[in-house]
Image (tube, rainbow, N blue to C red; front, side):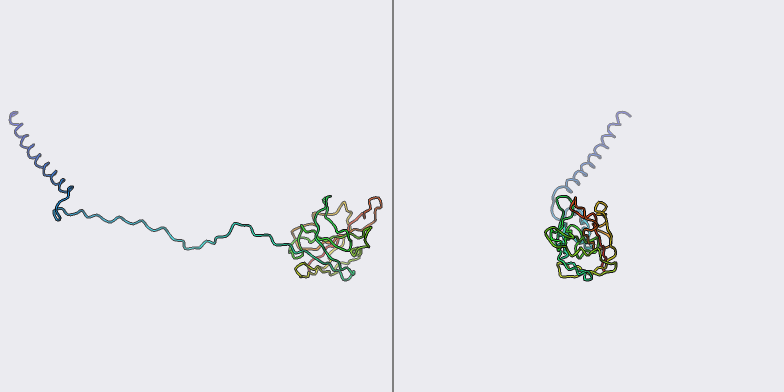
Length: 220
């Protein structure tokens, strides 16, 4: 029995070798180029093309990041209070060396505070002021501001040719040390015109009046 076993395994080995040879031949035929028609090409599906990127359906506005140029101020150029006979030019002023609002030396000229609202502003207080008198000039038109009545109309002519009418709302005397500057120089809130001059008793030791006369008017 043991002697016959190799013969059986030998026959199975030859058959297996034949099958291996046949498989190898098939593989070689499939891998090597042969005459047309001998091997059918393997059918492959074409690669699927990628989907195109989505296109925008909403146009987004593109704006420049550059800051717009600030609009030029339109300063007042003339103040008229017909009931008091006041008709005076207005010039722009800034801040003096002492930190106070500058005033034209001539009391016949009013100063407009150019760092506040201008003649066409729709918010804040347009600030005008003038000396009541001066050693080198006659008494100024605003010496009569103390006589103005509530309800009196007045006008401001602007550099652009426009004219704006106001109506006096209040007239108040303040000691200069108690002048509510933050309130009077407001840059926001309801529009108003503030007119300031000197008044009250004159202090010969300082050469100044004790008080400020303040008229506030609202656009008509």
